[in-house]
Length: 173
Image (cartoon, rainbow, N blue to C red; front, side):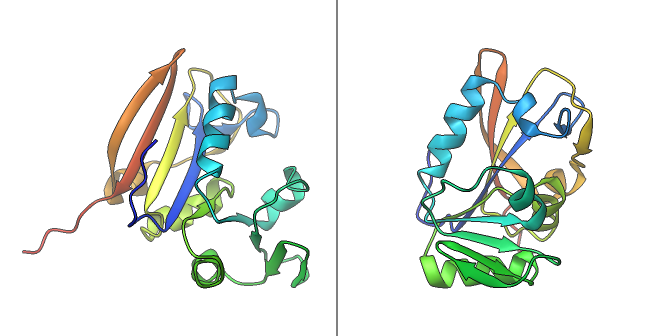
């Protein structure tokens, strides 16, 4: 898992065969052991984690030792320990986390949260795990990914595909 010094933002997303990101309301049901191992390896590269309010409410972030930045329209702004809640959009929050913590910042938000950042090419390195199983919710639209990013690597472990994607270089015409 390589990461160059130019990588300031990373994101990680798990996709089912039908591009769903959850099964029974959680990504955990789709995640094989190899994905959980890779997830924790990626997390060791980060200086801070960025998520949305829904991920904060639905996922276990209570034992996280890294600073956690939360972008939410409904949660009350404030800081508790290493958790910082802002009523700001994800792009604003990325810049705040980068200024306060340095880089890289790992984005672990849900599919809508990450998709909005992919559309703006704000993620330098995107890790995608693809499993050979269908999910039932929170579907990912690959159109902005394919338009703005290019696959850098792919590794298959026990039938699970681990991909890394980076922003396409703009050609100067």
